[in-house]
Image (cartoon, rainbow, N blue to C red):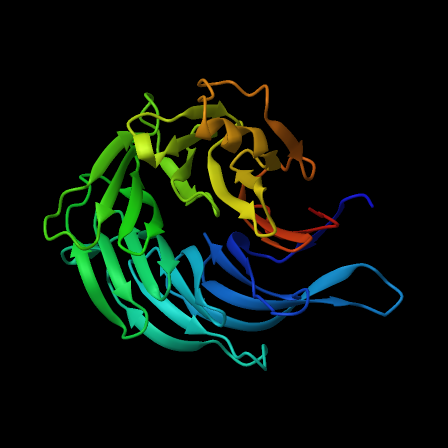
Length: 341
């Protein structure tokens, strides 16, 4: 069955898109977070068919929650609760009804003005979640660990970086990794009383921003970072210092990466250059455990483009079973179907 791509114009530049998980069925509901609009918002949508005979599904807006700034990240803290970072320095926890997706999103907690330069606000650039904890980063170079169960700030690493932080990822409950605008990567032990990283290394020699970081779902010591240049870097944290592989990939910065939830050997990436690619990581992760793949060696990488290149940035993607959503700066949402693994 060929891959089927359906695009829908939604009148907002989409910065984040997330499927709302369902336990026993393919979900039809999803969140979007917008940016660069007069009034940005987090919206809940549902895919619906116009009539039973048609196979084409169209998104219908169910609810809208307005925010004061650009939505920079959306991550789940549990099945019905999301953490949202906003460019005004705030972090919000919002709950969606498990039974009625049309009811408005409910505010659980808000951390106002979490990132700032004293009296002046600055952007909360990203966040990550793990088991109810939230790690937020910002242009102020600070890292905040938030407790999503109590609504308080567990810890703040002030001056974690001297410049703007762009990406963050929990490696385990007590460890986070951050990437800054110059491509400096640092690992932080949350339990430590000193504001010093437990490890530090470089994304690459060209001092370009680390735009996103994820770890391998079954091999958490393998970490991937996307670069502003479009390259993908891989580390084995058991011997960090230098990337074990550096793959010159997209023509523009990598905006988001996700391993497919049903097949950890498949990686999906989106980019500023308007591409969404699927990578076969099987050979790469096997190589990492024995002899290391040399930098720039892409001969064993199998890369497929999932849809024609757009003329605007694709900012975000999210997979659920055989369906993948992506959102772009051309104010459209794309549903990619029949992507079976």
